[in-house]
Each structure stands twice: as structure tokens, then as C-alpha cells.
Image 1 (tube, rainbow, N blue to C red):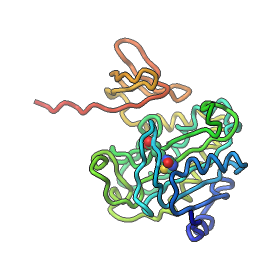
Image 2: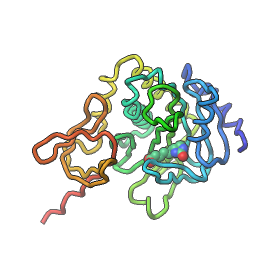
Image 3: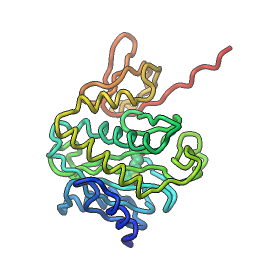
Image 4: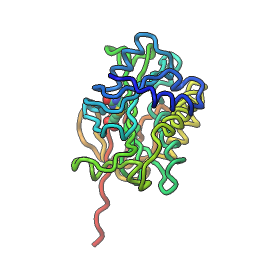
Length: 273
Ligand code: BTN
């Protein structure tokens, strides 16, 4: 695990944050940045510390999936946050992080408006450009409101092609912009947005964040398939928006249901005729 000082120095020179990214490790090859950050968090890394890597051998996604990213092309990093600063606002953290990523990408991509697929995938042109995996440092109590939280963020930046199983659903900034993007500058810009969103959240302005989140939400007022984590059952409904704690509001036969954990997918409109 070599430390990449060149990237780190360039990042520090461009940071405009007060806390986020000020303590940082940028490594070349790791299994996954999340466990490294969790371990560092337990050993006292301050809020806003990050662990970035050029390549993850075992990049992790939600629902025990893998996160695949070509070496040296993308952003794969984990951000350490103090959950006690968030207390009962912890449930809005995924929303705040997604808004920060979408706002950052909005500045970079003039041609497309980023959107958020509940809870925190960020899409460009309807395809996934960023995924997040939020984990707690207190492994046995994942919903604990004390201790540290690690937000693992993967952004497809300069990857020009994806393996066949992702080619239809994933995209990168390279694909959308038609050329490369400065990863270090992007990370510096993103850390500023993340810090602003985090401060808004701990400052008690969750309502403003949720308003922004809803305005970026993909598939509003559209038919949606959703799968609850608890039952694993696939159900159908109409996506309405989110509630005060970031749960997804879905209208099913006559009732409004709130999805707190799970996954959504969208049905293709039936071809006319
Ligand atoms: C998902 O969309 O399923 C979540 C993907 C999260 C990927 C990031 S990359 C940095 C961090 N380390 C990991 O192993 N995963 C997260």
C-alpha cells in the first residue's frame, strides 16, 4: 500500500474546506477503502478525514455487490464522519451526500442535469455515475448514533468503457463529457460540497437539503418497482418523493407506503402501438 504523495499534495493545494480532506491518505492498491477508513476512524481519525485509492481489488457496493472501477481512472474514497455530530439527523446523511455529489457534477457537466436515484446513486443521462456505501465503525450496531460513520464514495471519472454487464446502466464523466476530467480538482470541489452539506445537516437545515434532494430525485411521479430489504419481495407503485427522514414515499393500490431500506427500479414505458 504505497502512499501517493503527488496526488495528496495536489489535493491539499486545491482544497477550500476547513475540515474535509485536510487529513488524508491516498493509497495505490487496496482491497477496499471502507474497512481501512473504519479502522482509522476507530483509532481516532478526525471528522472529514479521507482514504482514497487508485485501485480497489475488492471494491464493495450495496447489498454485498462488488464495485468495479478501472485502476487510476476514477475516484474511490471513504470519508470519515463523527456520527455523534449528526445524532438524529444520521438518517438524512445519504441524502446530504447525494445532493453534494449531484451539485458538484452539475458544475462539471454543462450538458446534463445530474439526478439522484433513491437513496443515493447519482445518475447522468439516466445511468449511474456514482454509488455510495455508508457503514458504521461500530460494526455490531449499524444504526448506532454514536461513534464514527464511513461514507464510501465511488465516482466513474475517466473510465471510457465498462464491462458488458454494466455497459447499459453505468456511465462516467469521460463518456458524458467526451474527454478526460481532472480527478484531483473534482475531489477538491466535491469535498467542499460535502462539507457544506454536512454543515447544513448538523446545523439543523435538513428541510432545505430534502427540498434540494427532491428536486434532483429521479423518477418522481413515475411507476416504480421497489424491493424491501426485510421481505425481499418486489412490489409496484408510483414514486411520490421522500418523507422528513428520507424514506421513499410510494403510492401503491390506495395507500402511501414509506420505503426505509431497499432498492428501486423503473419500468420501461411500453412501446406505442
Ligand atoms: C453502490 O452503489 O452499490 C455503492 C458503491 C460504493 C463504492 C465505494 S468506492 C469507495 C468505497 N470503497 C468500497 O469498497 N466501496 C465504496
